[in-house]
Length: 359
Image (cartoon, rainbow, N blue to C red; front, side, top):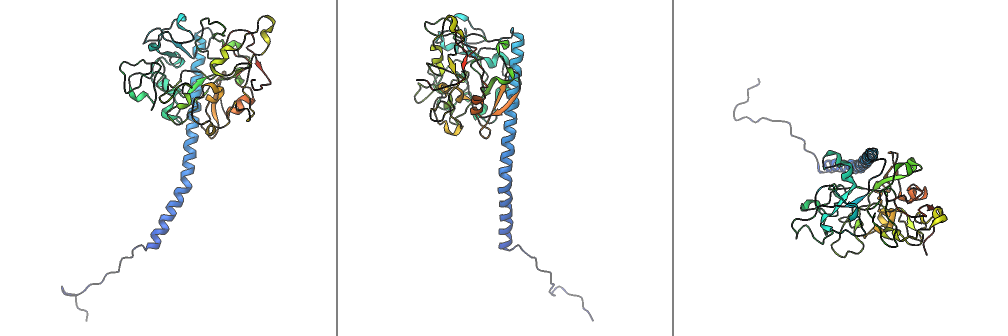
């Protein structure tokens, strides 16, 4: 006869089964394996998305240029002008000299000519793959957040030790620079023995589908030292207002020296005086990979100012508005920066088709 179990009786339950140490280690190993497989894929997806955004923004800037030219008698904007005041977009032709007669007035940049203000439209100039979305203004102003480490402005001020700092009329961050053969610098006033800049009309570009309008900037990853003034030591100015100088003078060189290239008079008008940089690695005029560019200024390295942040390629927007992802070497080999130094005056602005290193 079964008797009910009393208070003092023992009851039995099934024992609970716990994970063994080996099972836990196996689970952890599987999770680690999955992470190892997924992370590179996620990284590639993120990089691909950034490249697409950068290309879209480049196209948006190109469309802004098209609107500007349509509203300004087909002229492309100058890359920058010296401001006639500390605020506003006004500038005077008389002030556009070899150096700024009033440095505290700063620059009026072409980004403001396209997007007058800093609203949503101005975000097109940013690039998600670059440090802080792009290079800062050369003269960032009084807001310390707009500055980079070790940066100083054109009047030798830093964010930490100055009040009432000059502020360029330029978007806070710019990830793109224009083709200097199309976007002139501001040297419009006469200077003995030097060529001058001139405004360029869209109708002058012979092949708009094969002529680069703008490119992504090269970011050194070190507070934008890639755009440093070559004469600076320690703290440096960041020349984000400058366009890319794609050609070199046959007898001079890149950067400011192209203004010193002799102008051939009379019948010599069609004699080429400029050339694409050499693609010969022994010459060293063109650095193929961003990783090999190192630190220091790219200002006098011509097209090396153009970055290749997307797996060794960069987004290049062409005058007709389309965007291609190319290496900088390809842009030189295919002669995609134009066939003339349109933005310089004087005879012989044509491009020699067999570039050789200068003597």
